Length: 300
Image (cartoon, rainbow, N blue to C red; front, side, top):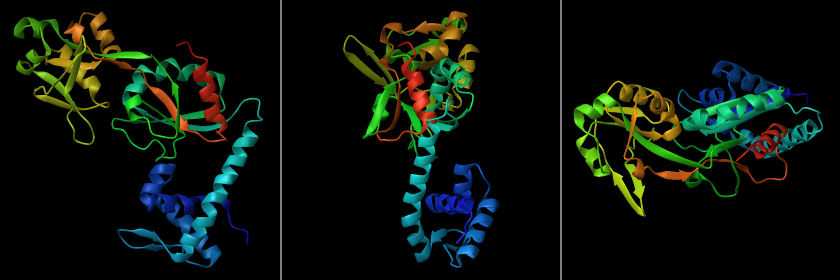
């Protein structure tokens, strides 16, 4: 039976995603194209692979039997193609990285331009998220996470600055009007610009000094999404909107320009920098191997 290989990829994508819309999002296709590909695969095979309703798409017995054999076989094919790719003078292909939004500002700008210049045949796709998700759920090859978010059975490679800090700051006009906090507990009397994760959690502000750690639940009239809306938080702080607590390097331009003034600096929380992590497996795709080698060559 001469079945189009692309149709098989569509069948696998829909089966893994559990639906056409989610499969389209993961693969960058569209639901109607995937639905047509599955329909043509079923016509050529002469069996129905999915039961479809207006709400669900589930595998039939024939579909499950096919997936049990097809998914491992296609993984072997992908591995074989990656192995051939490793013999190229310049590796090519697509590398998908799942990263926190902070990494797109604080880590990747110092790495990505030079990496793409060295490997022009690699397409780098960045999936940036404000909340921690399974790094491999969108067919990503690797991810950047901080050490408390590392998963088991992963190789962790340091990437970016090894020590980072959170910094508290406010505009000179705000501090002149409302006073300068001398202790983290004073923040409870101030307007603070807070963040909220996609999970709905509004994190406490954590401070540390001389072995003492404090977690403060602050209040304020502005609440923004962690990651994607933090530039708005900084802009509002500059416009006298309250106190912001964020990565020091994120605030550094405003601090250096005098738009914001640091407060409570002895209490700023330090933490270890992020890691690039990926599956510990024998064969690593050529684009990921090139990125790993490139990161290892970067100065600490």
